[in-house]
Image (cartoon, rainbow, N blue to C red; front, side, top):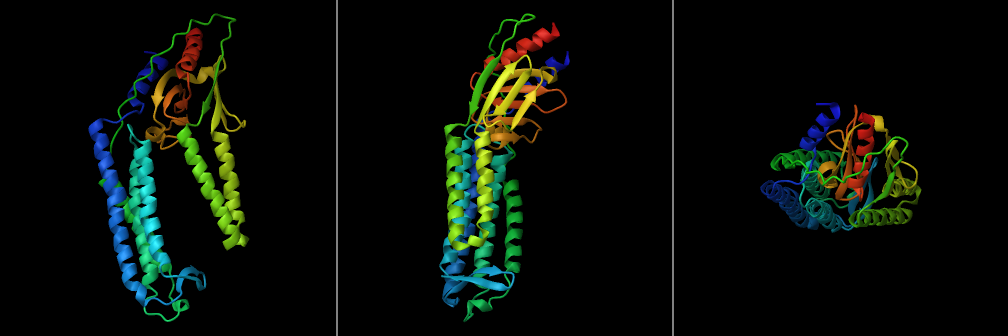
Length: 349
């Protein structure tokens, strides 16, 4: 068996796709318990303690600590909103995102986000309840002691509960992906040149997620302008970097031909070129970006594969000599793969 045939068989065994129904149900139930039910319990405990201690707090209460001590004040009720918003709001958002994206596939990312949901709820509970506890019985909030023990306790809770959340969820392994029905392309004779080109674009859902993220960043910048104008350069820099990254990874030009496979952003960067002599095998498959790569965009999988994965669906999978496979989601992947295969066949002839 030659290298290309062996690699083709190996990739058939390793490619990730959907998860068995029973395993998927088990993973979803565990995610809901770890990512929603337990955070709800932790948040309820924190909110109850804060509500019980509020009559003992100074007015206004300390809401922010700097290097020299308390440097921010506000209503004590703010801690109730923070406890609910961070301790329950973030886990709810994360779990809903996982359940909506991982419908037929599951992976380490889904498990990780469930674990982080529990960890964040613990972080929120300890920091918010602890910040209230250090102010109990004070006449002036400026007298509150250092906050670093509370912060250390919060991050310890984050680490411990995240690890527990990971262990409490099942280790679900996706089933191998079935390749798409291959397209047939007549052999390419010497002197003949065939080129296949297409555009790979972000799915509508991905665009919506990016748009929401952009709005949140703009809102953060606007808030910083009013609250801390001397630090506004930080979110502005983040906004510029993230904006460029979004623009550069939302659409790619894909080209398959005698030179191999070329994938280039519409902005010109980033790009990747796989010469024909580096291609061991090629095929068209169905790709599930969330299950295989943990999300959408330009990704590196845990198994060393590179993914330019902008939507769920057809993809060209190229096994590279001495490197991990490259997967590109694009409409007409069957024809693109067939074009590369025809050139590989001519090279072997």
